[in-house]
Amino acid sequence: MTIDDVARAAGVSRQTVSRAMNDKGDISEATRRRVLATIEELDYRPSAFARGMRTQRAGTVALVLPDIANPFFPAVARGVFDAAAARGLAVVVHNTDADAGAEAEAGRAIVDAGAAGAIGFFEALDDAALAALGRRVPLVVADRPAPDPSVATVRTDFRTGTRLACEHLASRGHDRLGMLDGAVQNKPERRRAFLEVVGGDADRVVTGPPTVAGGVAALRRLLARHPDVTGVFAFNDLLAIGAVQALRTTGRRAGEQVAVVGYDDITMAALLDPPLTTVHTDKYELGRTLVEVLGRRLDGHPAEHRTLAPRLVVRGSA
Image (tube, rainbow, N blue to C red; front, side, top):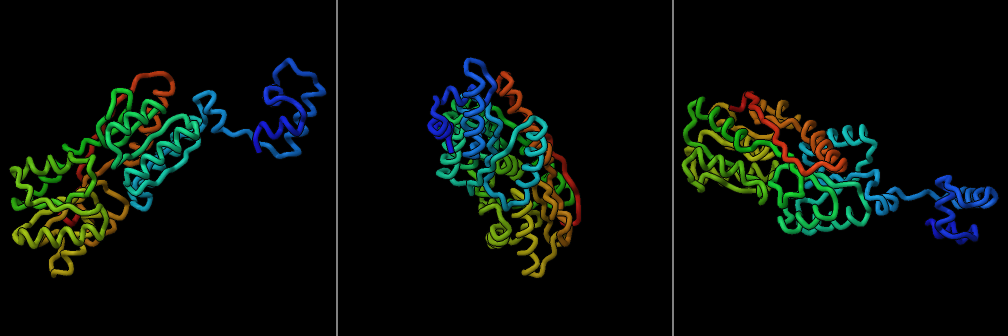
């Protein structure tokens, strides 16, 4: 049901319907009552998206996630939902599976819906396409460099987090390190920092999908290349959990024969056997900050670029 349907049923113009709904002048009381009665009869509800396309300030923010099943992202989403609610904004979630086509389609849907702005994780979309989206809607991207000065960012300091992990492994006597790297093209910082530590030996980095199954397969490939590895740094906790599982099948226990360090500190990291040593990212704060930075853009401030500090959480796996 649209405003044009109401106008036809009431025998008035769409401008008259708008005036009646918004209690504006220039129409008679009888006309106002007739229009409101028609709205009630047809059960018409104005679209927040349509209002947003006219005002560019709809009450909706789009949240783009690459994998809603990954335990990292619901924790971020909670921070987004709480912060958005405090600003009177609703949240619409787009799950893209880190696919460039799906991310581009999400961008088109966000613009077509007239959302107030968009925030989230664009893992595959190239810089030019992301910059073009940022010129059409206020945009804050998470955990990747800004593709354009108009696009705001909120990032974790991955370089520092990686060095914390590698320095911890070294302090425990592990000088033969390997890395399980997630296949995420726009997040190279962890790989680069690891290669700095190991002197640029790229053969000690094995790449796979950032999942538990990916960690199992990547750890096996790493040990096939370098059976002398005693310390493993993983791109995220899911890869690290897979590594712990793979070690168990070879008769080795994480934290004893081979140390394993993950990244993100998802809830299940502390429940693993042994509990996973990992680099903690404040996921709730990341989500909250994304909304805060978007809110400042909506209030007319220039694009901001914020960085969140990580910290190492030492447990039994390393």
